[in-house]
Amino acid sequence: MTFRQYIELLKPRIALMIALTAITGYAAVATKVDPVAVLLLTLAMVLGSAASAVFNHVWDRDIDRLMRRTGRRPMATGAGTPALGFTLAVVLMVAGMALAHAAFNWVVALHLFLGGFVYVAIYTVWLKRRHWTNIIIGGAAGSFAVLAGAAAVDQTQWLLPMVLALVLFLWTPSHFWSLAILLAEDYRQAGVPMLPVVVGAKRTAWCILGNSLILVAASLLPWWLGLLGDAYGIMAAVSGAVLLGFNLVLVKDTSRRWAGWNFAASMPYLLLLFIAVFVDKHW
Ligand code: HEM
Ligand SMILES: CC(C)=CCC/C(C)=C/CC/C(C)=C/COP(=O)(O)OP(=O)(O)O
Image (tube, rainbow, N blue to C red; front, side, top):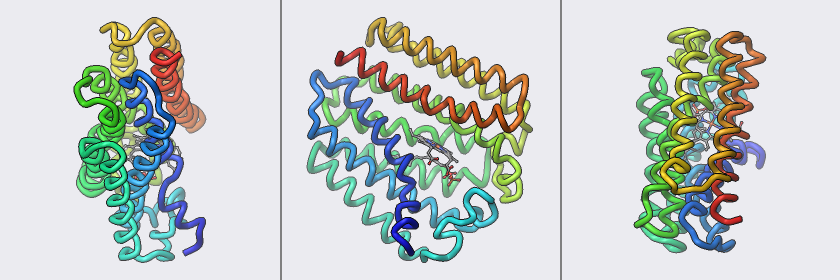
């Protein structure tokens, strides 16, 4: 395997996003942001996320082979062996948990493990090939990243981290179903029952809109409960309105173009929410 293929196994962009999610959990409860703690938290989260991603590459190599987007992955082509992948996944997860425990505490390590467990055991192994709810339940993986970050500071302040974990849980279906409309043919071919394969693009677009309505409502809870201030409330409301705007267009027009735009919009939406938490707490 080449160096590039090793990097591809780790799904680095997702690992970075998981780290940012944890940093947001951290910033939500910390009175002061310690750069060393942020660096250590980032490293631990990247290790845990990458471990789960490598396992996902190994487990899904048969269906990845059948899809255009994933067919060139190193485990799908046979460039890397399952034994190598499993070993790498275990080493990375143990390293991530050991770092989380040494730098912070066992609660952070446990949440890192649980995030990986949801992605690997519940989503990848159990539900992905069986039921369209795979992605709803898989959303809990991101929630654990928020809780891991918060636990790095203080395990008694749980309300704001729990609400932000709920937001992550609700964000994932809106993030993913738009992409699934785009990739529906691939998923059908591989026999993966993603929502658009099961109910079609139009109903999926309605599900995205309905889900995002709950998501945007949940994102306003921290403001409504007085946990965060008006700066957060305004940013969450405006970015939520933009997301809902994209979702509405998708309901009218389920073309690949708008499915792509909706997927693309989900990332800056979540980033803006993260920035809003940060600005509100620390500016
Ligand atoms: C089980 C839940 C999730 C599913 C099924 C899912 C699915 C996907 C898929 C299929 C892609 C396209 C990847 C590619 O083009 O190779 C993607 C991209 C991405 N996802 Fe998710 N996602 C989930 C949860 C999350 C979470 C919790 C985060 C982080 C908070 C996240 C962050 C990202 C990022 C940053 C990308 C774009 C970068 C990239 O293309 O590698 N996802 N997601
Ligand atoms: C706290 C912690 C360690 C969390 C880790 C959770 C994690 C890595 C979540 C990512 C979820 C994700 C991108 C799934 C991709 O779906 P897929 O695997 O079906 O996509 P693919 O078709 O691109 O493989």
